[in-house]
Image (cartoon, rainbow, N blue to C red):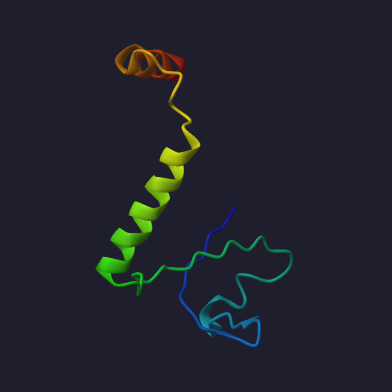
Length: 82
């Protein structure tokens, strides 16, 4: 399998293949799109507020209330990985 990498802009759903690769990438292709994520524009205080809100929601669901020994529970969970 041949792999070609280049960066481009998408315009109206069209990806332009650079001239130097056009002869190489004719025919059937498998396209994988990787897009770099830019830093979140959410301010730090808002991120903290979101985390606190989510943690409160988890706490309200009491999903860990039946765990009598947290250390033993964690060990059992880790043993499942090996």
